[in-house]
Length: 104
Image (tube, rainbow, N blue to C red; front, side, top):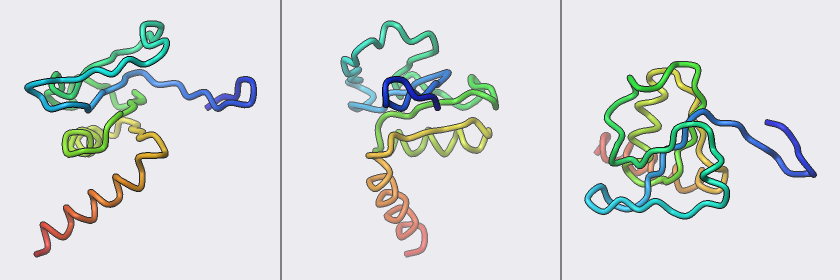
């Protein structure tokens, strides 16, 4: 993380967009997205973590089932995975719900 004009600047090697359902992938318009030099993919294109190196930093945007499943899969490969801070509470609720599904 770096700071530029009092703003935090994060650097990632790849971004996975988990928005829309796989039959109808939705790629939101993100300012300056075309300037990103890393890989950008929609979750419908994701097959497994083998396409990512262990040292890559991956930003997962989206916190529904596909976002969580992809983040867990990448973590198993020891990639560095990040969810935006504002999604963490939603992510925590999904994890708790899944744990209850397993336990009950």
